[in-house]
Structures are given as structure tokens and as C-alpha cells.
Amino acid sequence: MPWPLEAHRPRLPSCDERRHMTAQTAGRSRSGEADDLDAMVVPRGGKPGPHALRMWRRFRVPAHQDTSARVRGVYPFLAEGNLPNGGVYVGQDMYSGGAFVYDPWVLYAAGVITAPNLVIAGIVGAGKSALIKSLYTRSIPFGRKVYVPGDPKGEHSAIAEAVGGKAIILGHGLRTRLNPLDAGPRPADVADAEWKAMVNARRLDLVGALAETMLTRPLTPIEHTVVDRALNQAVAQTQTPILPIVVERILEPDPGQDSSLVEDGRMVGHALRRLVSGDLQGLFDGPSTVAFDPSLPMLSLDLSRVANSDALVSVLMTCASAWMEAALSDAAGGHRWVIYDEAWRLMSQPALLRRMDAQWRLARHFGIANALLFHKLTDLDTVGDAGSALRAVAASLLANTETQIIYRQGADQVGPTALALGLTRTERQLLPTLGVGQGLWRIKGHARLIENRLHPTERRAFDTSTRMAEPDPAPNPDLPAPSHRQESP
Image (cartoon, rainbow, N blue to C red; front, side):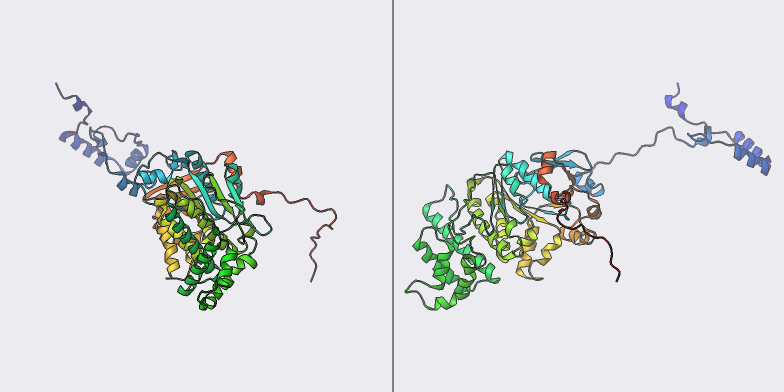
């Protein structure tokens, strides 16, 4: 009995049959051959019989198996390695269609990242502000807390009140006053002697930072001595000193002190005097009328009333950083978000930049996740001079950030962004085409294209373009109607 597959093999013509077919072909006329070719119709499956030239086996390509780390180089975004499932819902993966969650503390616990900090960059209107708001508000039910040490536009204030937190609004004409020399909340596990040393060091660092901000230069060693002596005298006079007492002790030291300190500290004293009796008075020249409550789910420092004064913004941020450092040093404080909105403006101040760098390096120790918001990464090039120490500190903030979220970039920013972050060609081509709320997420070698999904309530609360969408006010009937006639020259 023949093998069953023999029936599927095509039969080859014999020698006599081939000779007969050759003779028939040679006897045809040229015109008849053309007619035969015109009439020939090849079926979909090819020529039948021996002319099919097909094998009895079906053509098959062997399957190829490889690791996700290698395959994702050929198929980016489609063959990415998996991330831990824990975290808050962010949105939808634009390639796989699955849900995407994120939590820096979960990723750190899983060993995916070694630093919980993140940076978000995108042009105006791309949706980066809505993204960070959705991240921290959705984290609050999981026990996370939120600190906004400087909100230049005041857009986080309403959210802070809505989640049960507090927004501290400072500005001229308001009753709110902030004493930067407050001791702040005391951690539960700190002894008396250690706490006294911590408060003294924080106050000394704060007064020095304020003086450097007002002088726009570093203090000399002699000026540091002047500040130290004056602060000690102020603490001996009252348990909770205020800036007017420190300034008075700098300009007029107690009897018995070195008389040369008066001349050595003259510039520092007059610089700090602006905070107590100059153009910045009324904000820092007395006891605090508000308290920093670390138990609240969210605290925000609203700087919208003073956003036009870079000097005042830097002073307020310096004072707020001192407040928050006391709470951040508490090991029992839990996990906290620290949001730096409009970071390009804050990083232009050397004292603030150094404090931010310290918080970046101690993020794991403090249990915090710092978030920097930029319009474009080239904003870092405006920090200090090229090759300066300040430029190096600003670059280190980006280097110590393992979660990078890039929203739509202008055509002129694609190249610098790709160079700064080491983007692939595919990632680089995607940046100018991203829509509102769509971003390229890069988490320690893992790349995702994510669209942030918002609930209608969140969309209304997070919207920062309501002023642009408002209708024009009704015209005043008492004023004459505007004329659109063009006068001839």
C-alpha cells in the first residue's frame, strides 16, 4: 500500500511526453502562440499539474524566541519588560491599550529604581500640570502627603483645600506672616540636646541663605562669624527669635563684643534689613501667624501675590524650605511628594538650588519623591555660567532622576532633549507628535507611551486654562463704542 502522502506529489512527465510537447511547441506559428498566451489564465493557486512546481510540504518558518530586553530593541514599546503592578492609576498605554500605574515607592521597593525623584517637561498646554496633580491627589488615599514649597501661579491652592489640606498665601496687604526662625515640628525620636543642635544649625543656615539671596553672592568667613554671633545673642534674649532682633544684633552687637564685627557685618545687616523694615517688611518681621502642620494631607505655599518679584519669591521659598526640612527629617512622617512647579525660576537662585540638591540626595533617607516641572530641559542651561558649579549642580538634579516624563516638545527642543536624556530615534520622532495628556515615560530603561486619563471632576479642578476660555466681559454702556475705521495717513 503506497504512503498516504504520495497522492499529493505531482507526477513528472515521461521522456516521450516531454518530446511530444516540444514538437508541438515548435510547430506553432508566432501568431498562434500569441493567441494562446492571451487566452491563458493562471488560476489563483498557480499552474496545475507538473507546472505547479510545488512541494507536497507546506512552507514553514521556525519560531524565534528571545528575551524581552533584546526584542524591545527591534519592536520598541511593544516588547517592553514588565513593571510592578502596584501604584496609582495614571492612564492607558497607547500601544498595548492596557492600564498603566505608577508609584515611585513601589518601584523603589521592587528594585526597579534607586532614586524616587522624577522630572516632567512639556510645552505650555501639553498637560504636564494635570499629570502631576492627578499623581499626588490619587496618592493621598494611600497615605501619601503632598508639599508644594512654592506655587508661583497659585494653581495648587484650591486642590489643597479640596483634599483637606491648607494653602498658605503670603503677600503684601495680607495678615499672614511667617517667622523663618521658627523651630518647626520636632521629630518624636530626637533628644533635647540633639534637637537644640538641629534647630541652631537650621537657623544659622537659613539666615546665611537669606543673606546670600539678598546680597546675590556667597558670604565671606567673617560674615558667617557675624551671623553666628548675632544669632546666639538673639536666642539668649528670647526662646523663639525673630529677624528684627538678629538684624539689630548684627548692626549693634552687645557690649563686650569685638568692635570690628560692626564693620565686618555691615553689608549683611543692611541686606537683611530689607526683610524687616524695607520693601519686604510685613512678611518676616514678627511671630508667625500660620503654623506648619505636617499631619495635613497637603500643604502649599501660594506665591501668586508676589510672583512679579524674583527676590521675594526666592526669600519665601528659602523660608518654606526651612519649614519643610524640619518635617522631612522626621522618620515617622511617611512618604511625601515635594512638588517644584516652574522649577526653572526656583533654580535660578543659588541658595535654593543647593537646598534642592540636598533634598535630592537625601530623598531615600527622608522617604520623599521630588518632582521637577519644566517647560523644556534647556531651561537648565540658564542656571549659572557654562562650566560653573551651579550648572553642575543643576545637571546633577537631572542625573539623579530615574523617572523622566517628556510631553510634547517644540521642533527646536527635540534635539537638545534627545541629547540630554539619550533618547532613541523612535522616541525622538514621537515627541513633536504627542497630543494633550500624552507623554513618553522613561523609567530606568523602560519606555512607555502613556495617555493620562482624567475624571470629569478632575478635569475641571485641574484645568489651568479657564481664564482663556471665559467669555469677554459685557461692554460698558457708559463708554463710547470703539471705532474700527482706519484713518488715512
